[in-house]
Image 1 (cartoon, rainbow, N blue to C red):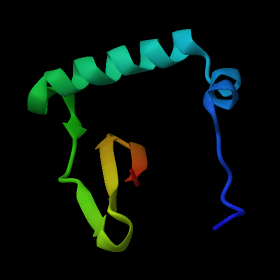
Image 2 (cartoon, rainbow, N blue to C red):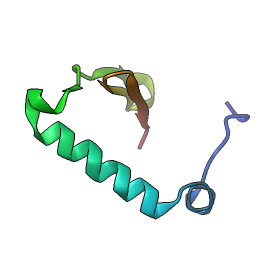
Image 3 (cartoon, rainbow, N blue to C red):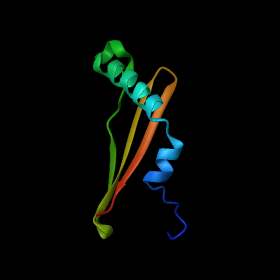
Image 4 (cartoon, rainbow, N blue to C red):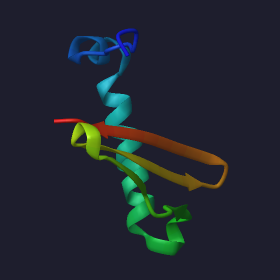
Amino acid sequence: MNNIPYYGPDDVKVSLKYEELVSALELALADFSKGPDGGVSQPLRATAVVTQFNGCSIQLHTKKNIERANAIISVYP
């Protein structure tokens, strides 16, 4: 597991344009807040508990029309 890349705060800041991110999030949250009229589908999340390391991985996904978003969040305290 030593060759898994790590992206720190500085790497993220260079890669993301804050204004574009905020604008996209505003539109996405507005559509989601409209309920069924917003056209957003957000299925249940999948969680895998990893008791050996006292952690878990969570998969989040959503879709609107043909656009999809996925995120995998791993938490190992």
